[in-house]
Length: 245
Image 1 (cartoon, helix red, strand yellow):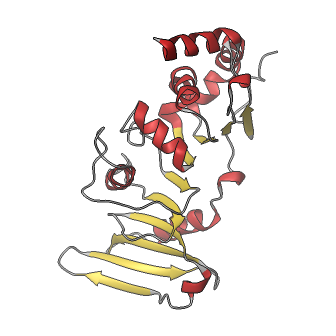
Image 2 (tube, rainbow, N blue to C red; image 1 turned 90 degrees about the horizontal axis):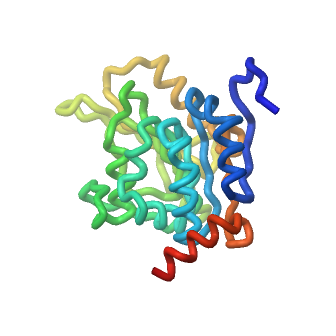
């Protein structure tokens, strides 16, 4: 069965099993959509070897068009072993949502093999998109902000009432830094942008960040391969053979 010619996207593709037939099916049915639509990706916890299979067989189809990514600590760590600069290797990546609160940003910004995960995220934030649209980073309490981006921050309940919104300007760099509370909740927006900015564009981008929830996005791919029983025999044998070499 072929996709309708008028198909322009999809809600969610959930991948629970991978073998040659599954890969061929995805290539045959969806590759054209992957090539022209922004992709939102989430990979659930998996081992190094399983992530390597995903990286080899699925990533080449979608990497260039990933615009949003939900990350778990162990998955991010494993992916960076395969490709240290994996965030900046996704040229369309604009949204990142971290599903863990132990993330610690680190300087200097770097995404080589020796850099920490915190340095790699800072490097991604400091790398501008071709159209200069601000990147969006969603996480818990964060201790830094990079140039021209919007960070969605959640503060702990015990701390949130002591957080005071502000709007600061730097006349030397012609930039402003603002912290805005959203609807009296634990959620804030931390925004760094030029003092002279297009107010309508930035208002639109801020609304996008407020409304953006990974689970609500179209063109979403959920990869839930967490154990060897979800891998075809041929791929599994090849994986185990590499382990034993």
